[in-house]
Structure formats: C-alpha cells, structure tokens
Image 1 (tube, one colour):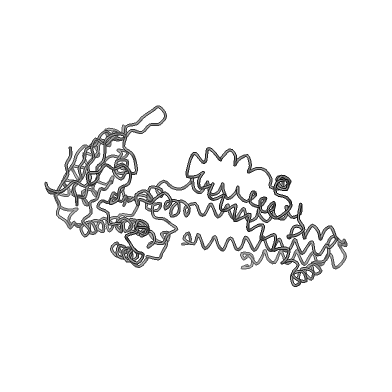
Image 2: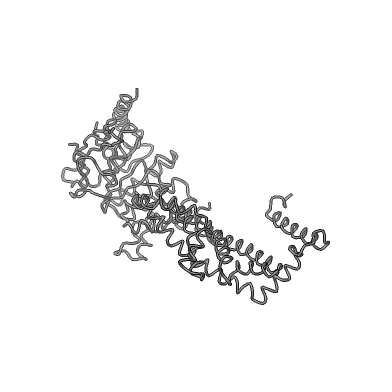
Length: 251
Length: 271
C-alpha cells in the first residue's frame, strides 16, 4: 500500500493517539483531573491563542532564545573557526571546552542568578552557554576537516587570509556549522523553559509551571502543546533554510 | 644544466637551481628530490615524467610556491619564488576537490579575478563567459559542479585558471581521473588554448604517451631521490592529431626512448 510508505502514516498515528486519549477520558475509563479530554484542552488552547495569552507568553521566551542563540552562533563559529584554523587556539581552548561542555545547562542556572539576577540577562546567558558548545565543536570539526587541496586552491589563486576564510573555509565548513546550529535550536528551547520555570513570571515555561500550580490543567497542556508545535516549527524552518543553503548538494 | 628551449633567444620564464626536497619523519629523513636544475622557456610545454613516487608532484608544488624546497631556489621571471606568485596557476589532479562544490560553474571560474580591483563586475562576468565558451562550457554556467561529469569539472578548473590569464599553467596529472576519450578531448583542448593564448605549461604525468603527444620538451626523472634522468625535445609539428601524430614514426621513437628509460627506473626500484 502506498500509505505505508508515506509520512501520512505517522500523522495518522498522532491523530489515533489523540482520539484514544479523547475516548478514554470521555468514557471515564480514565477519570482524573490531571488528564482532561483532548477536546477540552483544544478548546482552551484556541481560547488562549485568540485572547493573546499564549502569544504574550511566547514573546519573551522567543526573545530570550533569539538573543542567546544569535550570540552563541557568532561566538561559537568564531572560536570554532579559530580552533580549526590555528593550532595554538586549539591547544589553548580545547581543554577548557571539554571541561565546560559536559556541565548540564540547568546546573549553572543558580550561578547565573547570583551574577545576573532573575531577569532576562540570566536567561539569555543560560541559553547562550547551552547553545555555544554544539556550534563551536561542529564548526571546529568542519574547519579541521577541510581538504588541503581546497586550501592550496586558495593559495594558488592568491586569496588573502580573510578571503580564504570567507570563500573557502566557511562555505566548506557550513554543513557542519548548520548541524551544530540545529542541535542548539533544540537546546535553546529546553534551556529557556527550564530557566523560566526556575525564575520568571513571564515566558512559556513560567506559564506552564504557574498553570500547574493553580490547577489550570488545560492551560498547562495547552502550554505543552504549544512547545511541541514551536519546536517542530523551528526545526522545520531550520531544515528548509539548510536545504536552501546546501542546495548545491542536490543532483 | 638542462636547458629546454625552442629558440636560443627565448627568455626563461622559470629556472630551477639545485632544487631539493627532504622529508623528515621523526628522526628519519627521506630525500625525495636530489637537486634539480631546469630552465623553462616562454611558450614551451614541458612535461615531467617519471616512475611512481619519483617526486614529480612534489617538484611541481615546489615550483608553484605551494611547498618549500629544502635546498636550491626557483626563479620566476628572474625573481625567487617564496609563495604562489602572480602569473602562475596550479591545476590540481583532484578537480572534484579543487572545484568548489558550493559555487556554480561561473562563480568557480570567477574565483581568481572576482576581487581584483582592476576588474569591474561586468568585466569579470564577460571574461568568465569568454573562457567558459573557450573550454566548451557556455551552456552550463549556472550549474553546480555535482551536476557535471568529471571531464566537464576539469574543464571548469582549466577555465578558472585561464581566466586569470597566467603566464604559466602548472598541471598535476590533470587528466588522470577521466576516461580515455575525455582525456583525448581535454588534451586537444589544452593544446588549442595554449596555442591561442601563448601560455607556458609545466605538466606532470605518469603517462609517457600523453607527455610526448602534448609537449615541446619531456623531462624524465629518476626514481627517488629524483634527479633528471633524461631531457628530450619533442620535435613534432603542431597542431598535433590524436591519430596521425600518435601513429607517426618520430612519435613512436620518442615514446620508445622515454618509456624504456622510465620503465628501467621503475624496475630498478621495484624488487
């Protein structure tokens, strides 16, 4: 069957699971205030979308992600490039990177609070710090894997060092850089939600936690559903951008 | 000193003086090139042949300024080469790596001239189009390299070198990775553009037939550490023809002489 080979199959599974959820809650097979029917959640979700609550909560979260993420891209690519291009930079920074990288990002939220307070700066920093390592390491590995023939090509055409970086090194490392950037998009979302749950009154993370605390269970689910869609949308957007930037790989 | 020239008065474009190369691995060292003297006159087509591992490519990279010699010097227009000089372009054997996959054909060709302040954007575009036309790739200017055959990719590499209008092309086994028919077509293309543009070519190949067919002079190296074993002026008329030239008696005689030298060198190292 054609269906078995299409992605529609996975969509049908999701709809089936939601349907099952609806049936077991409607028929009171599962009867708990913690698990309202999907239909109730969807109604509440639409209400929250229309009255602007969700948008108002997503705004600050997306802003924190954007600042932290963009900073991580700029700094991560620069350091990764330096480490891949200059042996000295690698020797200098590799041990430090390997030491900082394994720290789970929530662990330095308390530290960030001490230095930066409870505001946006703290959250932006935490996003930045979580995002920088995948970008940095993937940039480094992309740059260090550049074929010597490409660097010699730059030399025989007498490109300056800056031109070589711009025209050869960065484009050659771009697939790796984009891989790191995509991993970091997911991390940014995780970390911003944690940071908002720990210390915030705004943002989607705070919204979900507050909903749970005040027993607005449908609100809580609506928040989680929103994150699922947001994560999916960001990843889909990223894949589109990646496919466009790496279109030269298509036959 | 091996002097290869068509006319006595021609000025040397490139001169190698006692060029040597020794590689060090830990406390071991291997001498790849022993000390080569060679003069290359303007407009000549010099092929370097030799048994595998004889340091032909190493020598070419040293001439290009891509590799530093351990001893001796290279003079280009009388000036010592310390890095890749203007007026000399190296064409790599690995065209699939040297041609940048993320650039279209036209943008690949523009690589060497797109940032030159003396060349306007429009001029750059025209010049790229002209050289793409010359190598027979006018129709694929907007394609990406992946979409082209190996032979077409190597044409892109040649156009990209020619667009810089160099005095000298250095070519490292440029046709070794394409099929025989494509190779013949590329050889004739190279001879034609050389004739038309008057460039000097220094060409490395392991294929004696190819060397004789293309060149005004063939230099045979010994096995490592490489020295010049033999230098032969190829007095076959241009334009050359894949069938008649290769079947002519002098061609066969040159081939016989050079191939036996190379084979002798190869087998003396083999056992």
